[in-house]
Length: 279
Image (cartoon, rainbow, N blue to C red; front, side, top):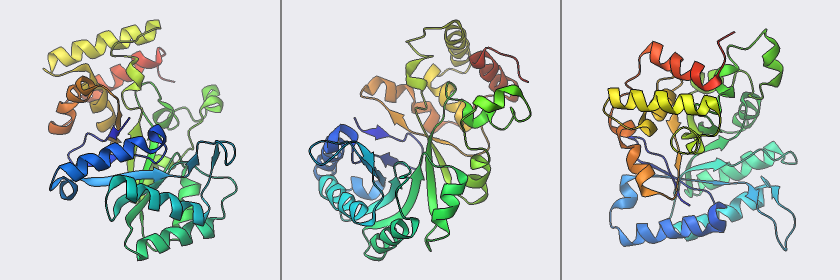
């Protein structure tokens, strides 16, 4: 499955482990068959997760030699000479940050990667890596949606009993905003929980509200979901992961129109999805 970022920037997002490399290979074939496409997009991929097999268990691997090898393999599959943005997929507890940073610096110096980012990292981890790099980190990809709301609720649950169960690293949104790191939201459509596979009363209520707002604004529920993310001042870019072209088409207005949600509508969606009043 290829994951597309449906934003006006034209970013194509991938990862070396998606379908064990087949997603990159398929996209590489598309690039080879479509003259000029490579120049019209920002090509992004991720490395740092090993799925496991004969060479060992599933694991995270941000050792320098491993990063260099994964980039070499991705370049071959994508049939390109350079990756525009390389994200480190997940933190590796055994990684030496100096070694990781040295590998990224070398890839940049060789002209193999133009820019770097991270995925699933909090502010302290980002700051530690950035302190060892001369090139700025430009992106942080996190699970963010109307269903996965820890990222927004971390900022309002402080000093409440519910804060203890919030797993989002406090201050990460603020750090990314202050340092020009673009937040990218994976799981942005909430795995269809509000657009076809509702299973709880809150999900049904949220789906009904989304449908009503979509009719009011002459768009789709998927677009309204993405507008809810985009309306946040952190400047969140949604990543659309789906094998269904109709789902991608349903997100079209999110790329072409400014978020058409009022302050009150944004809060109504949030409160309906959480099925609780605000603290």
